[in-house]
Image 1 (cartoon, rainbow, N blue to C red):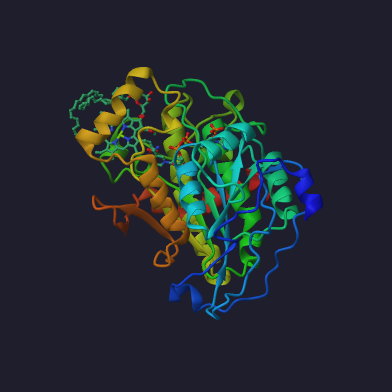
Image 2: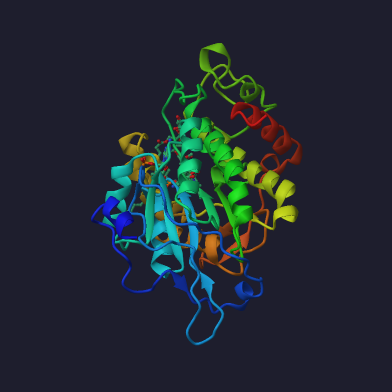
Amino acid sequence: MALQAAFLPSALSVPKKGGLAAVVKDTAFLSVPQKKLQAASLSVRTQVATAPVSTPGSSTAAKDGKKTVRQGVVVITGASSGLGLAAAKALAETGKWHVVMACRDFLKAAKAAKGAGMADGSYTIMHLDLASLDSVRQFVDNFRRAGMPLDSLVCNAAIYRPTARTPTFTADGYEMSVGVNHLGHFLLARLLLDDLQRSDYPSRRLIILGSITGNTNTLAGNIPPKAGLGDLRGLAGGLRGQNGSAMIDGSESFDGAKAYKDSKICNMLTMQELHRRYHEEMGITFASLYPGCIATTGLFREHIPLFRLLFPPFQKFITKGFVSEAESGKRLAQVVSDPSLTKSGVYWSWNKDSASFENQLSQEASDPEKARKLWEISEKLVGLA
Ligand code: LMG
Ligand code: NDP
Ligand code: PMR
């Protein structure tokens, strides 16, 4: 331990209060038998910052003889801002979760965690650039070498290029919005399924962010440009700009706003396909959600200044769909850890009183045939088939 601490930044310290095992009073959690923990010792120093000195995931017997559930480990992609950061903070604050912040910009993430007041030792930052499949594989390696169990994975990171009329590409040559939001997460989720399966945590979950704007059964989903994957011919062709279409549906012209909305359909279809293929076998809960319109996040950084000025008041006072970053963080934290949200295959939303409910996806975002086709093409593009 002392040797380990010597390698870690000075910002690291053992949490003074709360410890690494939380007493969970909820009986829903306690009904599942505890298996042997596989948490090995932390052995990797490179690309891992603010690693906790104690091992997350180790269990501690409660002194009063009550059953305890060890601290869970949740990986959140894109936890350096917006929803991901707010959820990381909400989960870390409970003391029941150790948060692995999987981020492309290490320093930004470190500053964001500090700025949000997250306690040293309650989180670990690990590098992940979803715009590179090599980086995704490297992240998985690093995570495994760090020796933590994986109890929950949140595929949250995304980019939105609303005004782009020409595509940009990932390291592997795929259009950026779909490459990052869908393909990077698709590979990450597939690789980490094994780790989730190995976890002995009572409720293991894999969550992928969806959105209302990818669902054409809503008003918001009907604001042009509308989402639509067509017959997936552009994706099958590799989303490679000049040498084929950069749009999933194969259109010749590129539309950044549509590419984002299309990527959200992919996210929601992937969650359901994971559910169909693995829920029964592995017992993992697969879920998606629309957290509300978090109009103030970095997602809109590339939109025109007028939009960024008017969008928050528009959502607050006119559509009433606005939700603060803190509130949205609580919603996502609920989907990660609320004992009542264990149902798999669900797309969660919240009503005006902030109560969660199972929402209805559009026809396209719940089409099993399209989900299967998307799965098969995506497997090829990320090198799994
Ligand atoms: C497309 O533009 C882009 O072309 C595309 O590239 C891509 O970026 C895409 O989805 C992303 O957007 C779409 C957008 C551009 O245009 C539209 O959505 C079409 C309609 C535009 C209408 C704008 C003004 C309408 C004003 C309505 C006022 C309220 C009436 C009730 C409305 C709802 C009823 C159901 O648009 C923009 O970029 C700018 C639009 C910004 C959106 C918000 C505008 C609302 C302004 C209202 C101000 C609210 C103030 C509230 C109170 C304040 C109190 C302090
Ligand atoms: P933000 O832009 O605030 O956060 C997005 C995060 O993704 C950032 O941390 C960003 O990193 C990260 N990211 C972007 N590209 C990559 C990459 N290549 N590799 C790794 N990480 C990357 O947006 P939000 O918090 O609003 O969005 C979070 C999720 O919520 C998204 O999935 C979005 O689709 C969804 N959502 C958002 C809604 C909203 O109204 N805002 C509504 C519905 C869904 P960095 O900090 O380095 O830029
Ligand atoms: Mg939308 C009726 C309610 C409603 C809701 C809940 C949203 C959510 N929006 C609604 C209505 C409208 N929007 C209306 C009436 C308009 C025309 C003025 C409108 C416009 C609009 C734009 C231009 N809205 C947008 C944009 C964006 O660029 C955002 C987007 O599409 O990103 C892909 C967006 C959003 N509206 C939402 C939500 C949640 C977004 C953010 C993006 C997301 O899906 O993640």
